[in-house]
Image (tube, rainbow, N blue to C red):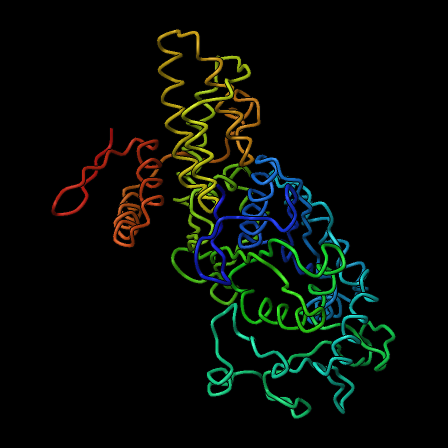
Length: 460
């Protein structure tokens, strides 16, 4: 049975869709004012795997991933560039699709843009005002009243009293409560605007997702996903305004992927460690980046570094090498490898453990090839089939291996860093990550020896 870690309840729960055999899923997508960075890549890949595996399990999946094509950053960037904001967003939507396609990310069922759903946004705001959950302020903005929703904070675990005590929200004299958030922004000169019952203006960010998800999936749906940084306040605000408007439970399962760090530091333009996906793909193949992302559990922090990508390259090359010189055939329906692989993904989409199964299967395939066994083609077929479930190993092996980019190999410093990371993972009982690091090092020709005084390593 599939189990999902629900951010709302903070525990793994058996997955039970609202409608038998059908899953409705919404994921917060990109705000399109720049190129996708490695953090965006993680969101795209993580929920692509969720989408793929749910379909593999036989569900009919409606997957909605929105595009935010109007907000402060978009307006500011368009002004800086001296271009119409529509032109700016179209350019970066095209770039996002190119990047996602390169990563092997399937297109969602629908990809709504906020500016195409202004009527839905206006209807939701009107409903909130009618229910006494929102108000028009003297400056023309419309705000949601956080006090009107007693369960505010249930997703993030934050209490209103604590939020007010340590208030960091920008002071706004027009709000009734400092925690209230904007639903509709009154028009400013030279900014995009739409007509509304409260005057010309544009939507706030939070209301966009509530309106689009409700319109396309209904007031109550199965899964809502996004990056951990969206849990508060964005997703908290989505719950409040949606449930106040409809009177129904908004979402059953909330999923959040962990942060991406760069050499153990927060990724930030100010720190000079900000990498667009396009920059990374100049040095590494897109499938290597996908493999790197899947090498850690989606809820764990993901540490981006060249050494990690080098290990991803070595691991992926090992898998493709096993597929050389053997013609895959349809594998048997029943297999211990298949059972273990699916069990890993049924355990909250544990791709790190699923990759470990692929390496076990690879060793068996290599042995079968060496011994000229009759089952080698079926094992190769199974490796490609299981890899395909998570979007890997679908290229021609010979062609893929000839397309290598950059130098291979791993330095002593990189080995030491990974050994330290593995020790930390073991200390935190993150066995999947610890095993994945051992497997990566083994594939890079590094042997580990665990002892009472720690871990020693050697090459060869």
